[in-house]
Length: 314
Image (cartoon, rainbow, N blue to C red; front, side, top):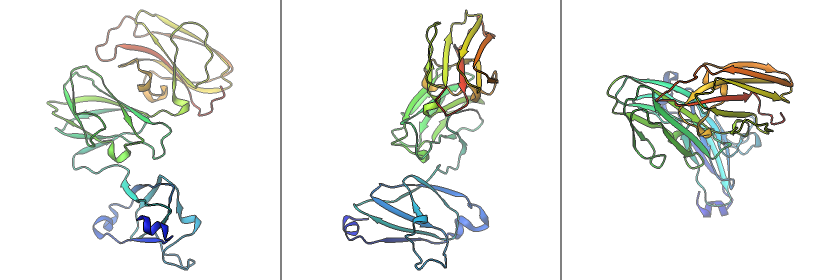
């Protein structure tokens, strides 16, 4: 909407008409979109004609959409009414992009193992529309040491890179600048069957790690902590106080990095995980089953502990 239209306080009405190709046979009944707009623009939306409203278009409070709101375009009609106080644009974009190649959709704060069987495959990262954090932390590891070439679908996410052998690829992506539909990238030049581990981390306040570097008593104000250990450690003993009937997950894991930004919550690792409900005090004793082991792919050993709660009062 132009500055003149905004200054005149006029409404702009947009009618989205039926798209037979897209919607017939119910193929795309759940086509999800997100809308981003400045607070200076007011947007009202509905996908039906109601007899209790005086106008085909709308300005009722119940139809008002807030900034960065998900809209599911799944009907034969989409009605938008827009007004603004300064020149603005309405942007409708898909949550994820469509590709003809095989696509793998990642969930945030998750680990996925891809068995790549095609010459080109597309991992699609995702992020919340209203992210609690500025960055998404991406790590990629070839579990057999095969060379892999990765290319971002959107320029500026990262540079085209060849991941060689057991080298871990890590990247910090600004998700304030790049939204979910811009977070796909391409695996290419696959010479044979390859298993690839992809980890995507977006930090919430309750999922930020404390890295415990000493063996001394430490008071924690966060819900999760990690303790990296040397392969010569035989057993860990952890004395915990003040859990107040907390549900927890913990375990000893092998990791490809000691950067805590790229570590998932303990229960996301799925294997070698212990789940418990703890009272106020608890002593954990855990044997190091990786004692003395060398690993060319994951050469860090760490004890990871997570409280299953977004409350920060433990």
